[in-house]
Image (cartoon, rainbow, N blue to C red; front, side):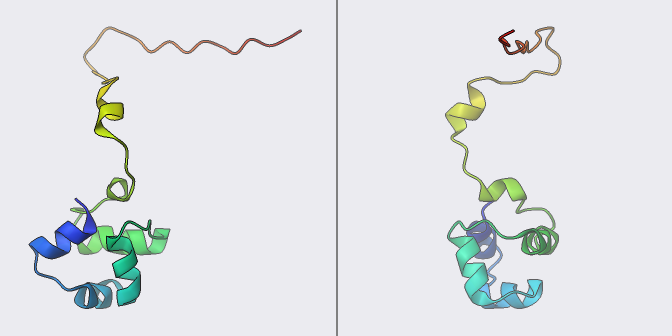
Length: 88
């Protein structure tokens, strides 16, 4: 869940959340607009949201790209990685 969505659903202002995680309101605003937080801020956000907002929520990967090659752990198919061709 995106941070902006979390704050909206829980009726938490950026200022209140900033105080909760120990960062500025301006930083929280940047995170809500898509900036990826530094590790310490990310840990604070994950902890404060009880995991509702995760590191993955700050990265955009098109769903078509994710779903184009689904991995089924119960499948007998294997991913084959060809070794690179080295020139002698």
